[in-house]
Image 1: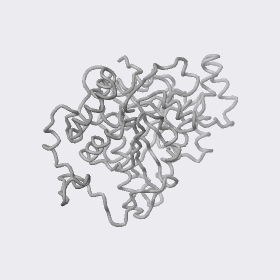
Image 2: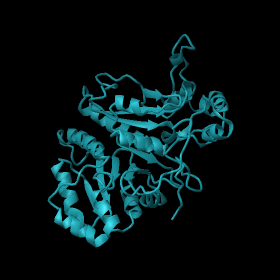
Image 3: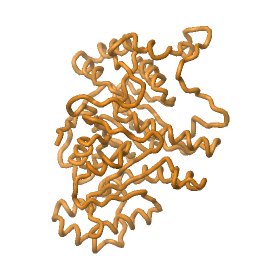
Image 4: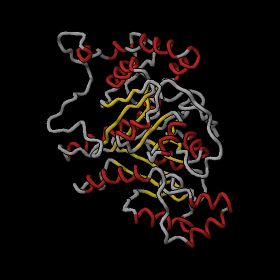
Length: 387
């Protein structure tokens, strides 16, 4: 199996396959930005007249609500280091310090970052929003994406340039200048936080915010551009780690016995239950318009549980919660990677690094949820300029 470092957003080995997005230099060429498109200087007040930007998506659409209130939206906060590839800049920060890092960023601010592991996921969220706006032009029940970064505001220009270059619709920024973003996440009523910093992810989970640490696999499987696919592990992700604790302490036979005895008692909720609920809420908006079979959101339960021996309790719990999972795969301990390769999710959540590594080996973008009994060892302390 490919070894994966717990250092945030590292390439596991080799080179990352190209995504189907506009190419970018990530700092390789000063002329690459101008070669792709003209930067909209008028937005910064540097020119008297607006200049059209080739390929840039219009920000204003008649009848659409682009800035929903946090209480109405499904808010997904992503760090700059998982949305974009910033390994080179991170190396400058670690080796030369913050002042040289800021100088480097300013010198290269017209060079867009390349897409990172969260990029396909964010693009899929935007595709779902487009469909929702077609069906519900006035609705604020949309995905709202917030870019959260430890970066100093000086780096904001490069991030804005990059977002416009890749035609992303991200207008909400949270640049903390090295301070913890957790308080801001709570103010945004964040439904999901994706970061490269495992410590901040743990902090978010402690505060009741669904969160996961993202990693860059060696290769990336091509994913759907029209349907958002999200896959979840069960125990310690959607559910609590109650059953996992029985297994760790007493073995598989005792685990099966415990699940059989308690199959009519609901499992407690896990850290990502609320995000699945949010996805289900948006799915029902499509169902209400007769688009169940053409829904642009699809959810998956991918669990090591056995169907006959321990699957009933999981399914009864989901049903009691009023949650519909589109597909449930009970693998009875079989490797998850090959199944995930067939599903091709934009993101897969699991609490165990063993499964994260197996998924990444097959090209799946996987996110680690550091919650529950499986977290036996503290990950390395990571200090970074731009999580």
